[in-house]
Image (tube, rainbow, N blue to C red):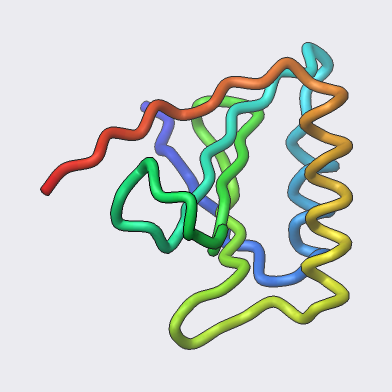
Length: 101
């Protein structure tokens, strides 16, 4: 049985390395975005992290901002730019999040 693995990328270099090692020829990618909003329809929220995966067994999580950690401004800009390119070039699937109280 294959075990699922999540790699936490805390720098642009780690994110870039993950993408280059795991992207696939079929150009499909799944992603999910984490915000600080309690209400899924809130317009007053910030993205604090995201996950991305090219297959069902391995993915990465990028914590842009956490209680004890925040990306450097330069790394954040580089990650955002690279992520935009990835999402433009690939077939994407957004995770379907449900809000539970």
